[in-house]
Length: 269
Image (cartoon, rainbow, N blue to C red):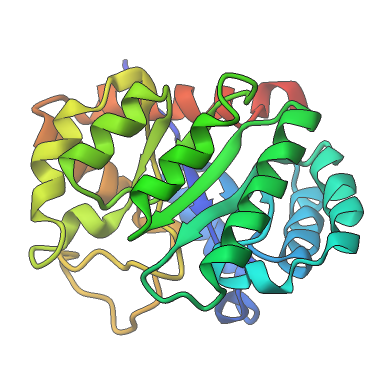
């Protein structure tokens, strides 16, 4: 009998306040759905600390990232870098980030975003960990900065990819892996991803929910709330597999294998 591969959700904001009242239940239902491992996103220094504590509560299930999202780049001071360096060195941390550029909202100035992005890439090189990357409406600047640090980086994944074919081809040319979320299930905004996902080499494809955000729009039955959860990752992977014309088992096995290696689950035991 062939067992269904267990999945890895590479992007989950489990420290988010919306999970405070039922976090254990969310994790349990995800496991029951076949999500064996989860990577908790660190998007500020405080959320990174919270993510590390969650990993310590169940290190066989979790890993996390350590970083500052571009929305919070203006909050990252020079004297915070030593603290971020210490957090990145923690064995619970599998990647640096979420870091990058976001010119869609510019909650932080483009100058502060670039400064914080470069600082985190330097720390990633220093600690020898890959990067968990965010980019929105800043593709050219993002790629130009990344090129300054390749190939010194230990790898990178374009988290929550939603861009155009040109963006994807640039990321693949840079050697990045690509994370696909439930955006691919959105008939309004994600239709183009159904074609583009076929271009991603299977050995560089990963899957994520970005919970509590990006609830897949085509869930049936539809949940009574808008909070996304890691238990919906199998639905995302099934959609990816259908769009690629591949079996669920093949895509599930590949995304799991890729994520376990990228985030160092084996090394953590």
